[in-house]
Image (cartoon, rainbow, N blue to C red):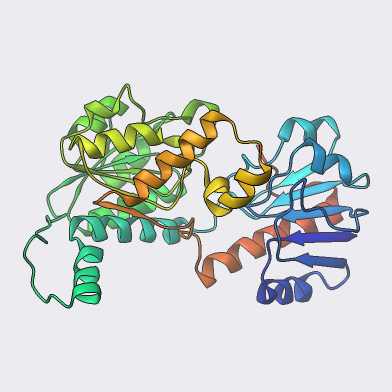
Length: 335
């Protein structure tokens, strides 16, 4: 097979070469999108990451394409309708960083609850070695609301229990056996918002989870609670988060994702060539306001980024490709 990998670093390419030695391989560090197509387009398979945008125009450019895999758990960057219509097989990574993302989420929680970045920034920028205005709060004895009890959410429960926290959860498909085994209880989303000192989001981005936290329900959040989002940006309504922080409903917001990351990554190109719509411009402005607010920590979609997790991602992607070569089906097709 002739296989192209996009958004891949050199060490990852070297790793893939060892595992797929019988295939003809092409590697690109760049993203795949309609404005960044490779000169060669006769690939049998393509592997992408979350920064690529695989829409109809991109899919149409590869007439030989039989397999499209994404090295991610999310797949909202792929036009699945077009893929299905063309009979192209798919593969994704259902789990790679259960502990990895959960650990990062707790790093954000600790940074906000103990004002760690503020303390560091004070010493670094002003040389002030004092703790005035840096009082935080204990996690022990507090309630954490975990939205989504899949692979990552379950690890969040484990870590929270280690901190001595009380755990409540919301899930569209509650697993009562899991709740009994791990000693937490399921509640409605409104109940979770009202009773949680910390809220952490761990659901996939679907039509049903778009703006799960929004203007209509954000006022139900317990005053002063922390909200953590290491899932997907559009799960929250950015303007609602800004208002809740401004009004003192939220005590802090920690996120590894933004509602429109593409604009933030290359604003100059967006403004010059992107034909921006009013909605996108407003959202870009809201993102900047959010980033500049106090009690906010934003990181650049980095929660997945450990050597161990990326190796697990590559192993699963390679397994999907090998399964397709041998059986005509991937082990983990996109659902």
